[in-house]
Length: 143
Image (tube, rainbow, N blue to C red; front, side, top):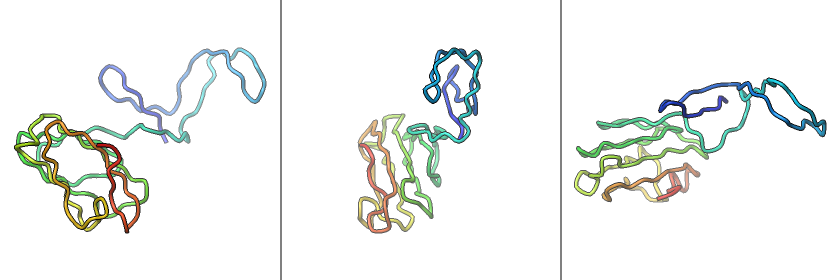
């Protein structure tokens, strides 16, 4: 997995960084000039692939984050297939969800254990969904 970082307002994905540091590797202290640390197989936590601005109805993809443009009503459809731990985050970045609702279409999955779509009608809402199991479906991660 590549490590992502934000630089100059854009997301850069890199598999290694070069730097000088005083570090200890396996109880061997020393100064290493320009050691190369390979992050290509690193398990990154809390770093997502992308933030996408949504201006129209669309199918969502696990692992992505979405800024919902609520100047119009939106229907955002959850993925057809999901695995335990899949996540999706959504933010009402325009602040009009109270009048232009966001509908999260369940696409056959449960949401919060219920067989019903999720309607977001609070302006500036920000929340995440994580897929649990077929018996629970997508659960609110934060809200």
